[in-house]
Amino acid sequence: MSLACASCPVRDSAACSVLEHEEREALARAGRTRFLKRGETLFRAGDTETSCATLLTGALKVTSYADDGTERILALIHPSGFVGELFRPFSDYDVVALGDCELCVFSQRDMESALKQYPALTEALFRRAQEDLHNSRELLALTANRSAKDRVSAFIMSLAHAASNSPCHPSSAFDMPLTRGEIANLLGLTIETVSRQLSALEKDGIILRKGSRGIELLDPARLHLVND
Image (tube, rainbow, N blue to C red; front, side, top):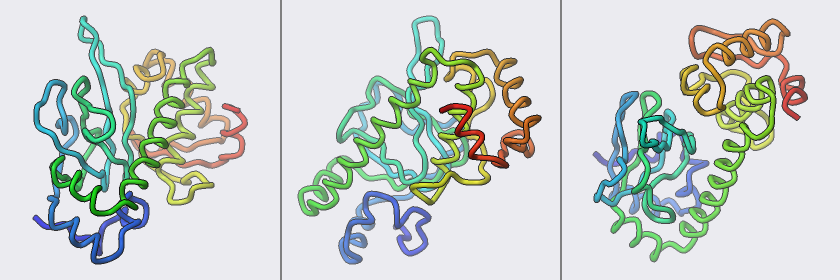
């Protein structure tokens, strides 16, 4: 399946946005579209297949497992995020869909060829790799000497920024890609504690929960102050 760049939801924010129209079309012809359902694996630890992808819709988690089977979420990939073998191999980690996902997938050989042909794409992917590293560090820092309230508040704010099209302002409404159990795992809390903190934020008029995953930010300024 050829990639429909004209209707791509991340055409203005993905790394390939730096390419000229003809360059992007040439790159698209080398790729394919892949769809994943929640729980399906994009890359599995130990895979020998070498490929990479840009996430168009949905969310992915990068995970590792302890000897006892305990999962540790190391990073979250949001739309326009790049994942693959080019800069840091994921051979030690699983990359798993957190919901319905659509991706542009390229073989490593085709992507390496494109990087040689388009220096601007190389620079854009290096910048994105730096941003992803920063985001991963912030994610891991959520558990460092912070109260449960601070951890949950900071996590919600990070999701709001990830869901926003603006580099400065968080999204006012979004769906949480993780279950409460996954949030608890990530933040080093219990599921009950996560539930209590979400209820407290809603009671304080800072957020409004919609269904099992929906979040509306009623007072983002106060949410920012909570985790400042």
